[in-house]
Figure 1: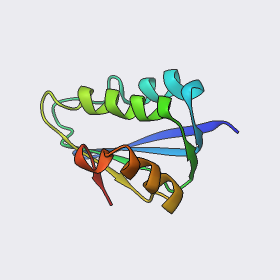
Figure 2: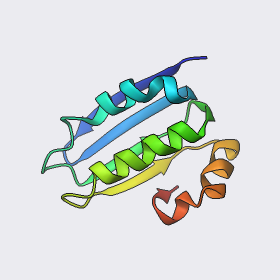
Figure 3: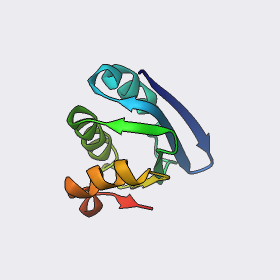
Length: 102
């Protein structure tokens, strides 16, 4: 199954919606989704995982890349609408210490 990634800008927030299977094959598409959009006006980055069925360790690394890119200037990075399965993977990787998981 492939990954569907879409971005939405609204005032001071960038929302990245990720659906399908989030794996290494989505690396270029995911990185491209936020490059150039993280400007001074963006204060919050929201990852919407409502349609995400699967996430692997490569995708966890991509999330860390996004977090690093969001540090200067500091931005809040949060993950919303995760399925219980995806949320369990995020918690197992201790991502609740790095991201706000709602």
